[in-house]
Length: 583
Image (cartoon, rainbow, N blue to C red; front, side):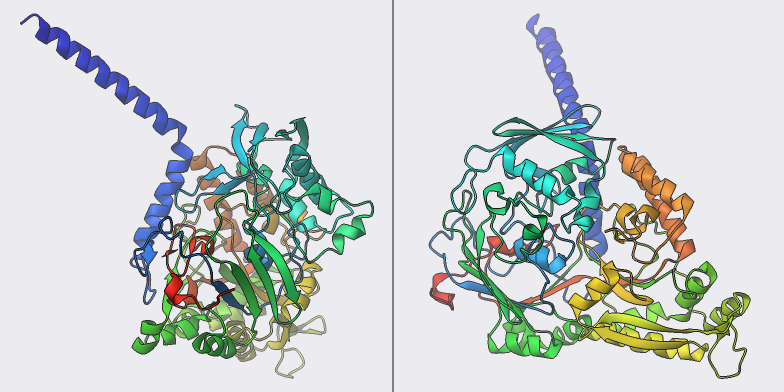
């Protein structure tokens, strides 16, 4: 009898203690769990998004386990890409998304890397990361077993060399260096420990100091006396990752082979090849013939292919949304006599039927957008409505801005300057060509002449970096957690920044600066939505649409999983009896 009350008190105390421990754990993980919740809501929205043949975020194909497939090493993965990059050097302003796809995490590895399902930074080359309470000191301790592909151990000196190289003003890495403006310095504590000091709080400080999307470069290979030595090194990347560079056949392909000296778990696929096939139809033909194993189809191409039951039977068709899914826009260079005026930029937006683009060009597999944030994140304000498609309003806005046909030649003009401009885009991109046609036709109806200016991708990138264009179409994507500072802050006009259109707005600058300093996620989301409303009003871009990521893959590959961050080819394998390439 006397034992019962005591037992109840003890049980109550233990239950209370357990609840306290759980609450503390939840609080410590609050920031990441909120983001995870956003991604979970992303999955729910995907289920109602107009994406045909949508595959849920789970394993695609056979349910065999990567871990059990130790005997299934071998075979190659051959990509078909529409673009050949200018460089394989991630510390270069010439690097692009194709450079990143080829060498980041495959050749060059960061200190911390995003987990593809939890969407949080976890140790990679570092075994631990400690952040001071004020967020201004970040200390990394390196693993003891890591080394580069040549067997040389990775030390703090390599981390410091990488950082000092990318911020060196004589290195052509201004686009990369802009991400490190809030880093004050890095200090070598010992052979395996480095400490970064921040000038001020930055909500992405851990991502940046982890050398995310750069990786650690081996000092003993890349060190230089003349910075031009480094700048000229566009090929033969050497790092610590699971693959090593084999060769670059310019104009044809880049080949990587498995790093047999890899410090971590080796991938099963022994060779990865990126073949450059510019034409959409030619890429599909190469896939059908078995010359390539995977391609990125054009949206209209994907929409048609998944209607073909015979095709979907023979090929794995994948469409998914994820953080980093790009949005597409038309950028108006505000240094031109046309686009410095917000009223003209708005007129250009209302001139274009963006819903019609989604319906006809994307075959309803995308979504019209109103700003620069990924449409399924909380930073994107769903209450902001797209500007209407209204050619009559376009004409009115242009008249009010002084652009009228004063000389009767059918082309609007102002102060003797005809409203005639070039529209630059990547040649052989079918989607961009279609949009160029829509822009040209729509503009002609309101008295504007658009001159299509298709150029090779490498030429286009150089022009855009140098801001030598009048208008252009591009896509932004790749950021897991978004910071719009480098794209829209006025300090990022020229000199390696990404504010290509020359957008200047004091209020926008102030909000972007506040976002970077705000560590509280809820306050940062509120500020991000405020920024969203500013750019929606100002229209430095005509925000067109976002669409899912598309891939078409040959079915012999197993363990093809759609994670929250997308596909991870390093975990794929091919059963022995299905392997195509034997060496």
